[in-house]
Amino acid sequence: MSGPAQPDEGAEGAEPAPAWVLHVDLDQFLAAVEVGRRPELRGKPVVVGGEGDPTQRAVVATASYEARAYGIRSGMPLRTAARLCPDAVFLPSDKPAYEEVSEQVMEALRTLPVVVEVLGWDEAFVGTDTTRPEELARRIKQTVLERTGLTCAVGIGDTRLRAKVATGFAKPGGVHRLTRHNWFPTMGERPTDALWGIGAKTAKKLADMGIATVAELARAEPEALADRFGPTLGPWYRMLAFGAGDARVTADPYQPKSRSREVTFQHDVGDRAELDDQLAELSRRVADDVVGEGRPAVRVGVKVRFVPFFTQTRSVALDAPTTEAADIERAARIALDRFEDLARSRPVRLLGVRAELAPPP
Image (cartoon, rainbow, N blue to C red; front, side):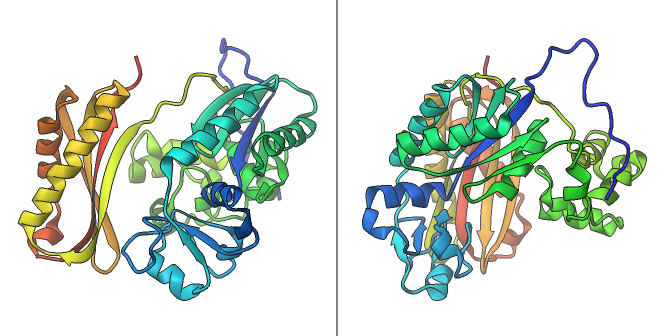
């Protein structure tokens, strides 16, 4: 299908962008690391999350493709995963191991004539001026496999957004290209939450406006979107529908935007005093993480998962950037007070504290 006329994606006077952006996404990363350490698990349904005990309250961090065949997904309670696949192998999360393997992957990418921008443990953007992006993508896959034993999918695009979305068509372990030429034939009839940057809640709000597909979002009136989502987000959502955006890739080191800690209670907690004690402990741990990052916190958020499985968040802007545990805890308590369901004594199964960090200097 043809789509609406493409907007101007460049800016006059801007620096030239790389010819191509490639998005590298490791397949089933956490599960793949665990299988690499335990080859006997290859081909078996593997679930990583919490302490690896499906009788305890925790959620799935990653499931192998064999486990996903049973309907197991990230964010699902481990107990539910165990019901879906009683024979699955459940393993605890091992952050240091994942960080070590992730660094090996990024170093492998840096051996190639490309610019590497790390997005997280299991993904990175690669900037290149090659005229043969598919050939480079295959070289990336081979290099990562030889150096780490891991497989990856590679999305190719003429913008970061298109490269990121293309990876979804490439997984697992393939290569796919999305550009302005095939964007609407590929994406036009897909739901709006197929776009990177639009989640289920935003998609529901768009649907309430009669906008269900990517093409419909591209044809939407900017003024109507601005009225519904604000003068910044509304037009930005429309730009996402075109796959437009930046194509630059920077080699700046990955800098986390926030640090967070959370606890899943093994029994439902309805006592506010117990929640306050846990909030104080989480705030102290987050403050230690903030100090370790060397960047102050500018906003504090609290996540509460109520029984049975309903999650809400509240956040508070700090009066001034801080690394002090007392300031972070004080803001977290203010945020906690904003949960109406706590006032109604609704039991809690998970509590989390997040500190948003100041931008790097």
